[in-house]
Amino acid sequence: MTPCLHGACLHGVRVLDLTNVLAGPFCCHQLAHLGAEVIKVEVPGSGDLARQLGADAELNARRMGVSFLAQNAGKRSLTLNLKHAEGKALFRRLAATADVVVENFRPGVMERLGLGFETLKQDRPNLIYCAISGFGQEGPLRNLPAYDQIIQGMSGVMSITGDADTAPYRVGYPIADTIGGMTAAFAIAAALARRGTGAQEPCFIDVSMLEATLATMGWVVSNFLIAGREPEPLGNENFTASPSGTFRTGEGLLNIAANKQEQFEAVCRVLGRPELATDARFAARQDRLANRRALKAILEEALAARSAADWQQALNAEGVPAGRVLTVPEALSEPQVRDRGMVATFENAPGVGRDIRVVRSGVKINGAAPAVSAPPPRLGEHSRDILAELGLGAAEIDRLVEEQVL
Image (cartoon, rainbow, N blue to C red; front, side, top):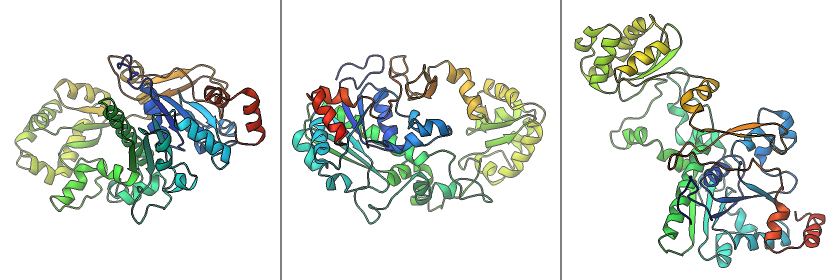
């Protein structure tokens, strides 16, 4: 691997992406933005199911759904029938050139195809193989199907989302899928880093979306494991501090996180209620937690005098973390997001017929946001090029197309 210039830390790494929908594609999306060459291996004719998902029905019909566009920029697409003997053989040849294989089939599917880890490492002895599944490769639930909402429910996430009247509630985006994909990308990067030390043994990475999601719930899980306190839904309130949560103002909602004593005292000063800092109900941290509803009512009465934007500025100026509650369009238009290169534009994207904008990886390396140069691929767009790189001639590729291997 070359030095990490302009964010291309994984330049020279080849990844085969056999994944569908979100967790796996999101993982490989991160790797592509870090410079890896990602080849998306898809089912001929249909491809990744995400190609048919999204808010634009016309793009879904073209197999270029918004859900696919969101996390497949920079990848090349190869269609390959892995149930066909020649398709299997071609995949093995391709895998022999790869550093990483990522799949999110149910456990055992790749073995039944004759393309599992034990087989592929024969051709590539230092292969990094990452299997992402709902529940992991072992255990009584290993063979069950799982989508994001299933994992949200079974992990306990839904049980603590919402408040006493609304929970259990689903988080508003596929958080378990996203966590699973990010966990996989992290593990793959670690395995690649180990290879950089000279280690050349193969590596099998087993990512359970259920366990990955639980791992991110460390605070609430540990409150139960260590302190014996079962987590409960608190809505927009922070269970560790008060005042810390969402507050009504004269115009709009405002999040305030006054987690330290000096921050609480600053809130009292800014809102013109300095006496609250010495009020016996609120003076100490535990007192504020016990009387958080009474404190919130008093603060919201004061906050009603001005807008959320005004209070955000005033509180931030005194060192109190505070921020307006924004819609997605409002968040994207914020200069803090807009001007840091978070959103990429691909002009007249092939298969789409117009400009598209998608988010990047949310990190900067050496001052630059990692980026890919190519838009999301059309289904099978690079099949001929990739097979030609493997040494196949045009006539042989034509035959494979006719025999529905491609």
